[in-house]
Length: 326
Image 1 (cartoon, helix red, strand yellow):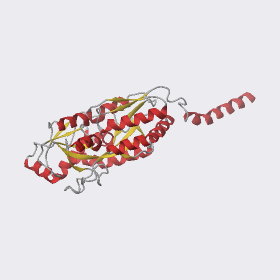
Image 2 (cartoon, one colour):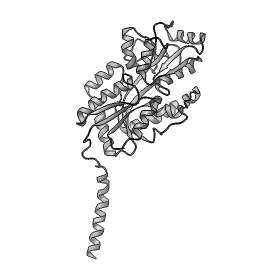
Image 3 (cartoon, one colour):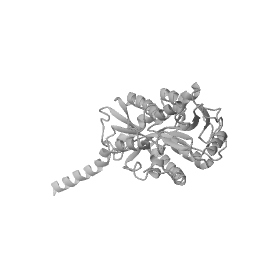
Image 4 (cartoon, helix red, strand yellow):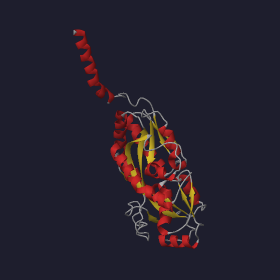
């Protein structure tokens, strides 16, 4: 009888201790280098922010965070690589509101569900886009772009960083709200799209401000308006597209870190703490704000809430646009 009581007591003690142990699954994390998968090409806005936060997190985690570009399919290819990686915290993914909220409505078939197979770590930055033109285009205002597009329906090409990205949908929203028809030319990232825009291979682009800003300042691209609800601090003299003649127009994007579903909660909590710390560091804040980003670090739950809001916002817009990718 005594031994039975002792066994029951031991089992009870183990049951009580189990939840506490579950919260400390990886006491030595990280014990090796991490990788951050970026689903777009180098030099674009997502890549710039990714390299900046990887640098900050490398300092505080005590392990290198290596950036790995996996572009294609509007970010879906990189998301798939991340989702199929081991859920141990050593693979991070820089997602966007476009990947989480636009792609599921835009793509007829996706190999993963980014809202089930990836989980939030921390939101980091947001930004507006900017309508930029090659200097050869004979339009100096949003109203003149609309007039040009109506005069030449289906002939003016505009570039994007890929199907389903905020850059693409900013253009789709513009044509939908202005009753114009332009040719969408998707690229595998903002970098190559801007390269062709600079060369005059395409006429215009609703580019992320950080990747377009240097070319605007150098005069190689003509900026007409920004896409946010209010004027952007990086380009305060430019009107919003709504101000410039398209009432109700508003488009933007945010980026945040995610990990494969099943990653231990204590690991996510550690990654969140270091990501938020990195996003608030003076070096990160200066670099990002100088380039036109807004800093929005927060909890994993706050990022999940942002995703839900974006899904509710973008799903009807994508459906109304008729845009679809097979």
